[in-house]
Image: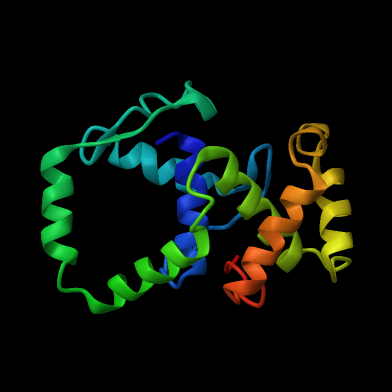
Length: 163
């Protein structure tokens, strides 16, 4: 997965109940937490590779290492709470499990739950379009509406990611 996708996965895992306390702010590709990059850097070579010295930026492709991944699965297999968090995470991102989709979904969630002037779909569209020229050109109102409706249907618009 890309570094951008890792940022979004941590955003939604935290939303699903993972007690990670990442601090997300507006970033070029949507919600971004610098401490997620720091964490990824700290596990480089131990649990994953691809981050390197961090100069790859958003283009960095992260690969989980097989042995630590197997050990993590064994350790987490009996963790009922983490299983519940993964189920909520899967429900949140269902249908948006690709780089463009997860950026769209996280951006819509961020503006819908973090920005005071955002109260409805129209203001979400306006806020995303004002986020950056890139987002204004990338996301069509119909896509923003689909993401907003999905978040409303999964009942996560009332949840916020802790800061």
